[in-house]
Structures are given as C-alpha cells and as structure tokens.
Length: 118
Image (tube, rainbow, N blue to C red):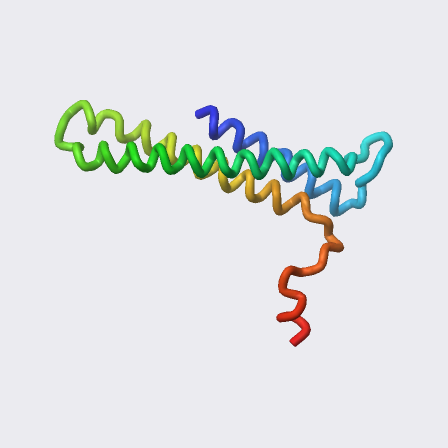
C-alpha cells in the first residue's frame, strides 16, 4: 500500500507542476515553481519509475508462483493481497511516468520534428 501512497503523492505533484508550467509560473519568487524543483521532480520520477517497475516485476513473479499453487489453501489466500501489491507498483510506475511527462517545458521541440516536417 505504500507504493500506492507514493504513486498518489506523485500524481498530485504532477497535477501541480503541470498547472504551474501551463500558467507560466516557473522562476524564482513567491508562489512560483523554481526550475531546480522541476529538475528534482524529474529525478524523483525516474527513480520512482525504476523502483515501481522492479517491485511490479517482483509481485507479478510472486503472483505467478501463487497462481500455479492456487489449489493449496495457503497459496490461494495470498493471491488477493499480491494482486493489490502488483497493481500498486504499476500505479507508481504510471504516476512517475506522468510526473516526468508533466515536467516538460511547453516550448520543447518534438522528438519527431523531422517526421512532422515531412
């Protein structure tokens, strides 16, 4: 559940960052978002995406192990919790990738600028 909580916090931070970037409130001063805070947000988002991906892989592996042994009472009782843990890890990955996306400057050139020009 802690992965889900971190994902929710990152999603809320992404909404805030996105709103401030769209309103042009980037810079130093009262109520503005400092450019280094945006850079730090990208670093946190990248780290969270990696942690979420590792944890999702771990929990999906455990889920497969338990699913293959679901005939046993003990294994089948752990499946719902494992599904929640895997879903929480995937939610963290999604929130982290969205936070990273929200930190882009609106004036950044497209990665496919050559394809758009053609």
